[in-house]
Length: 164
Image 1 (tube, one colour):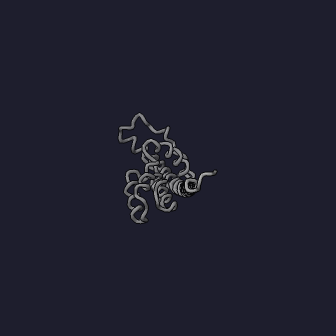
Image 2: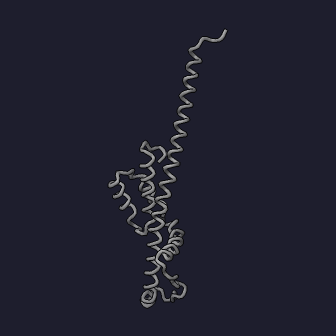
């Protein structure tokens, strides 16, 4: 991302959209959605795809643990009692008949929470990356100016006659 010649806004938008997509509950569709948006918005496909890797099988449990309470808050839903389900009957049809409504409620809370986090994470990623890229490019430009002026001084010193 930092080595790209694209404007900082384009680079940041590419990665931020990927990050936002990664936080959606549309697991398994992230890359498809990312590539479609990258083509439609004419963004860097690699940066968008890299952004989708933020939420992965390792980071999904903590994200879900944060998303469920957020979704519950946004939906003004009550906390579902998962502990009271008959887990010893998990492989029987009766368990799923009993647990179905609870699992649907939790799934909806998680989906709403993940969409909310998606918007926040994408926006924060964009703002932070634009500033970081601009700062990085300003440092590179300053270093290039210093190097160019040092070269000019060295060339001028070589061309001037030695002191007598």
